[in-house]
Length: 335
Image 1 (cartoon, rainbow, N blue to C red):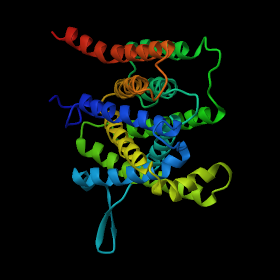
Image 2 (image 1 turned 60 degrees about the vertical axis):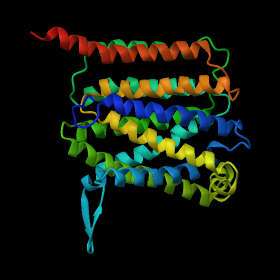
Image 3 (image 1 turned 135 degrees about the vertical axis):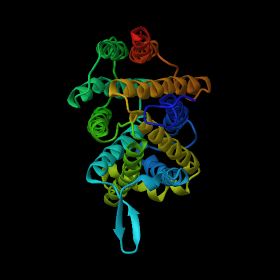
Image 4 (image 1 turned 120 degrees about the horizontal axis):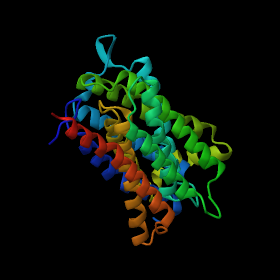
């Protein structure tokens, strides 16, 4: 097994875990919100149960791996309690926003999985060189080539359509997702992308201690208000747990936490964002394609559109440029 710069498994193993969790997660979320698995459950109603399951999965992971020991500690009476710092707490709040908006992204009616992925994943891919520049990291020429390919993928996926079928709420969801990712990547670049695995694991655990609990707390507040569009959050707490669909929501939550764990470990690789972000994005885009094709084969969803397939192919080509070119340059630079 190849070892990453920060010690431990290679980034490609984390990327595989991300892909393996993301494909069923996105497919099940879309199928449940579309009513393909029985009674339709809206995205807002899915979130309380799925986020609760994510919280349990997070606790199981950090304690079963023993990584909780790397977190900063605070003495509370006779107990030494793992405690996030101010910056990891803020990053965790961004993670909570990403967790929520990702699940909601696949529940908007009339919007395909791949199209939302191209908007969200392509946007984060475009950020990577910018974050590197702001962090004082060198951005190589092939990063700019990949940017052009990414812009082309978004154009192919959107231009020429009679109707983009993206509601205002869907666009707001994408903006919140991208804004949270920008702040989170900045914090990761300054505080966590290190060759010392202790630094990386400390950041990872402290962020996880905040992100899922914060998301669940926000959902509970929405449910308590319970008026207008927030009524679905209340339904997610008081009705969905006792419905036949609860098992699907639990599975979605566990898979969602899997994407959060493996996706974060890909991004925390010690190399520049222009490398780790494309690896992360490629895994999710390919997972979206697999999910869409699988749902279509099972007659649970629409087939993959040609424009979306071309857009996904261009994103993958951008990934190849960013990942293969550095290895070729390194080989030819050897004496």
